[in-house]
Each structure stands twice: as C-alpha cells, then as structure tokens.
Length: 272
Image 1 (spheres, rainbow, N blue to C red):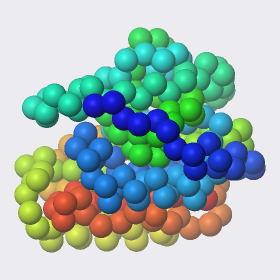
Image 2 (cartoon, helix red, strand yellow):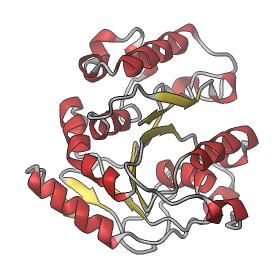
Image 3 (cartoon, helix red, strand yellow):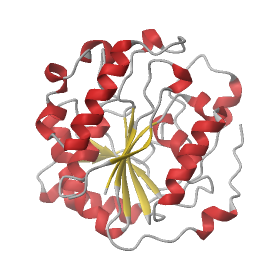
Image 4 (cartoon, rainbow, N blue to C red):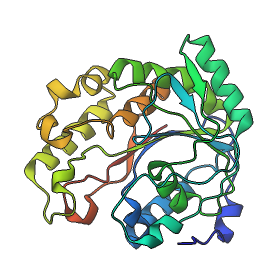
C-alpha cells in the first residue's frame, strides 16, 4: 500500500519555536490506515501543534535493554504483525533519519547514567509509523525510534525525564501505545465496563498528573489486569509523563472514544 505523501497544508505548518509538547497517542493496528475518522483526528491534532524539527518515538512494540536507538537513516519499516491483508505490508514511510537527534539523545542518556546501545538497521515498527502516516503524511520530519529498556514503571518515567530537554530543541517526544489493550477483546463489538472504568481512571490520574498513581496503576486502577493483561502498550505513557514532568498546565485529550466502539480506548494525551 503506497501511501500518499502530498499534503499542501503539511508543508505550510508553522515550525516549532519554544518548547514542544509531549504526546502519547493510541496507535491502532495497521487497519487504522483505512479508518478515515481516526486518521482525520490524528491529522487535525498534528495540524494544531507546531511542526517539530524531529520526532523521538517510543513505541509499545520495541522493548530492548539497554535502551536502543534505531536507524539514523531511512531503512525499511518493520512489519511486526501477521495475518493482515497483503496490502498492509506495502505501506511505506520514508522519513529522513535523525543523526543529530540521536547524538543529542546519547548525550542526555550519558548525563543521566542510562545505558544505551545502537541498532542502526532497526526501522520503524507499526506503533511508530502508523500514527506518523496520519500526522505527518509527507514523511518530511526526521524520526528516531528509541526502545523501552524494560517494563519498570519508575525506570520508564526516569527515561522520559532524561529526555525532557529535547523539547526545547523543537523535538516532539512521542509515546505510542494503548491505554487499554486486551487482545482477547480485539474486534469484538461493544465497549465493556472494565474498559470504561480503566479509561476513566487513567483520564483522572493524568488530569491530576498523579505520578504515584500512574506508576502504581496495576494496584490502583480498576480492572487493570483485564485492561492490560500485559502492559507494554501502557508503558509509553510513562515515558511521555516523565518527559513532561516539569509542565505546569494539565494535559489535554485531543482524541477520545473507543476504536470501532470496542474495548480499546483511543484516548490520546498532550502534555503542554
């Protein structure tokens, strides 16, 4: 599936000046690319923000220890899914590499004594490129993907804090996951009560910027074990919260609702 990369409005967006927001986006499976409503919501969100100088992407689909920096040049995408129609494996997103951003990330990680490595052949996975196709369809913003070193809430938050200075350089720190993610309920019609309860809890904890609650979600959130039998899709919101920890204003929720009116919340978060 060759996606169009022609958008006059895209090239006219104002460049970043001052501090960039930090975001967490629900990213959807590859079929999101055919969801006109959600694609439009993501596009409108991007249009409402300054255009970043580059994007630092933390996706639910890459966990590697120590923290790993992906390719710093344009390489093939990672089609980390199976069982979908063949056209989804033809999606392309030839965003420029971000070697300067990678150098800055390495410096910040060293300053915070966070070990890191490089994976120069590792392309963007679908948690990274699917939302980017909607938000920056011209693929003209340099993108660097960074792995989550492990699923430890405090460590993920501290990783985000280490990356916070990038905001002042026009970098969009971008967490991509899902606040509810139970594949047993994927593509089932109807939104179960547990999904509504967890989504409401997450919205309230994020609105208060209650870091203790966000980190301890497995004990404090209702239906946490059902909403997140495994929690790698929740993890990127902790990185985003860490990067936004010095933001004074409460976060906003540019996209809400449920994907296909099912169990996966589309709630996405903008800090700052």
